[in-house]
Image (cartoon, rainbow, N blue to C red):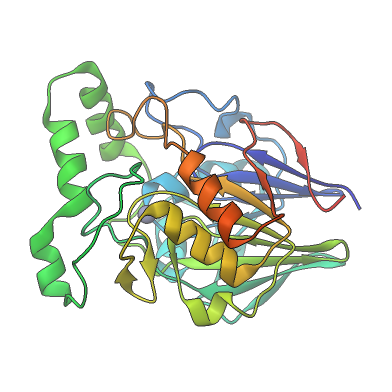
Length: 301
Ligand SMILES: [Zn+2]
């Protein structure tokens, strides 16, 4: 069995399992000042499935293009399906899921869908920080709305008159996506060669993760981690390491840590050194892969 993984920036990957091409998210057409990932949705001519983690633009945008060009079926939440249908994707291509489903991707490959949670955007001071953060625990939705967090940060970045800010403002106005997460989902792709877990935002239900035991885990590293509905009392690195401890994979691939939304994300992306150290402490011997864009990394060989 031939399995390769291409990173396409942010939390988007292309997983090729023998003849089957599966996109994990579809966000490759980014703000012009973000580094190019080497592939635009307009150039994608093969896809069988698109798995969408949640409905925000930096995950969903582009799925409408790939689905139209290739006829790929899209697995995602009701909100993801609603938006794609509104952008012309035929309903027969939309496999609405909320967690609990198993879909067949190829004769001997299936994917299981599980409910998840989004990173804590209401408190995130920075998307790319490894500084420990504390507090904001036990807040109701009304109280979270008062905090502002990441959305305020994006608003500030796009308010300025710099070239990058103007580009970000235009991008936010035009990219396909929802203000709502739609209910984040995580996926476990099961093949005869082993299983691959993928998430696209730094949140988890510990009770879901601890029994999955994937061989490979693709973990999002961005923002304030969400553990069982509450912000982690600590750092992003500690959050990713906690997930590694729960999943116990042999191989970990990081995602969502590049400069995907300048000027909000830093030019050099997230410093992954503290994340690597924390993972190594939590799960000694694990292989950590940080592929470049379109590197074609073999998995489960
Ligand atoms: Zn999101």
